[in-house]
Length: 166
Image (cartoon, rainbow, N blue to C red):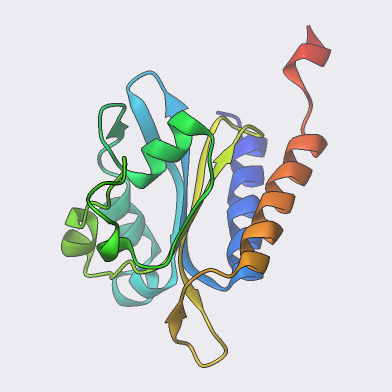
């Protein structure tokens, strides 16, 4: 991956977090073995253990295609998921939340907004823990979801198309 693409993805995550007031976020890139953590931002972990250590805690193991994770479901279906409480996902859903990363990091995931990406990379944008004006964790609003979907589509339109280069 080139530096420009990585910078674009990092900026996309930062802007999406700002416009939704998300405490954390991750961009996964689709690869042969599954979804690989590409960029992660987590304010709480960065304050407690530092940026480098927080990134290391979150990016060790890729998500395999067979895992029923929220991010994998979005990658495979192309559907956006807005989850008010990651620990309360019904058992009959085709996806689940794995609390092992929370347990390992000391972070607590509550609300999630997970959106498919097609450009500048093929992957998934995952936002975690929307915050209200008082700093409380709340579900992501419909407006937040619309803003992120628009942001992702604008990024897709701004990026060069591979078929145009052929």
